[in-house]
Length: 274
Ligand SMILES: [Fe+2]
Image (cartoon, rainbow, N blue to C red):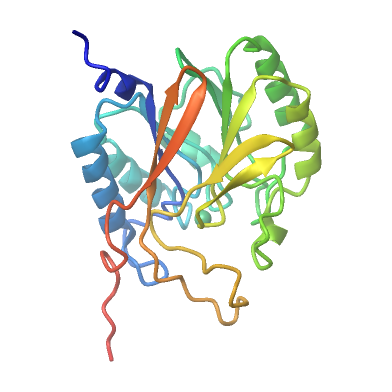
């Protein structure tokens, strides 16, 4: 008798976000190399039968060729394929030079579709060069409009870095997608958009927008504090919360997301010198 337990793994997708990788040094007191290695070890041990891994932007903290090449050598340890997106910390030219991206995308943007039996995964580019805030320009809109129409009979799962709507995070919402309403207007035209998967704000949040479910993934590196108690950039300090990765399971048009703590908060944290 076939086991119903093992087969769904083929419909799993692993989700990482906001690696903020650097080849040397710490970011916000955390070691991004140790954190990423812990995530990769976890994926290879428990989720090597997943279809692939999507990384929803901010691959590096500082966009240099050295950082991207060091990151690629780490990510190439993954036993499953991986698909990177562009975040506000990324450089599209370097990202395209260093990584092997699917060929079905756009020339100017890191934007491509990954069709599977579970549906079509759209990896979108919400980066606005030189800005922490995001945008989705006319060319990217036209591409997405065309692709959603082309795959109109498949459930479409959209990954992008910048949330296209406010998330009730007063210090972070100003840096979301500036023309998010226009982006959502486009999605509302299509019946096959089933879920949005977002990064950028380094917090675990889910909900609906215009009736479309969305989820936001924690960073593998450091987390933004919750909005209450109130904080500002002068008083900013990462929340003492463990990182997560996501395991998405797609089955008969339904989606589940499990947030997984692949290491403790203290792992890769610089020890207090006091
Ligand atoms: Fe980030």
